Length: 245
Image (tube, rainbow, N blue to C red; front, side):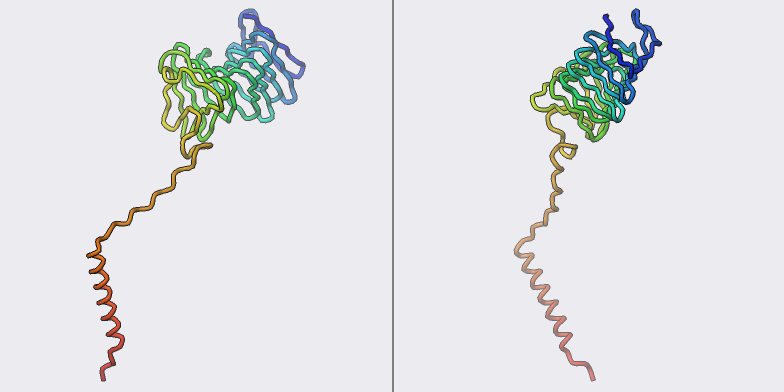
């Protein structure tokens, strides 16, 4: 695997964990920092990516990320690159998808990807490899995909969880493949073109139906009218009766 990385003086890249002939640790792009990948692959060896400045993927691939965090004020420009996340995906900043691919998988010994924030992906691949992978989505949010949503791995080994109203929405001409063979959806979770009724972006809930009024036959209505008339006449007679001496 070839490792190329263009590192500006404003970025911090610590070397602690060994990967092939390179030693990497957390990749931190500080506020006001600028970092651009070269073509080829860079492995974080299951350490974390934290972006508070700007990271440009260009045509590069950043793989074996454990947790990926875009802080408020931070930006990742996806360009046509690849990000492979094997832990948590937290987006409190800006992810400009471009034509990039984000891949959620389980190569770092973690079987759950917790997604926080709302992200628009160009292409999103979810691959359980040879085990079970849980994707936990935040409630009442739509993660969106405008390109290809691809599920892979062993049959039915991807569990998409969260809810209520946790979704992955396919925008425009976006496509999805592998869902029927590989995915189990928890209650309150959806994948598709249109959010369910009552969820963000979906149709409003149907108005509550009025309770039906029981039908009454003509005979019963006539009897009720006679009874009311009789009661009314009796009350009127009592009001007109002169007082006793």
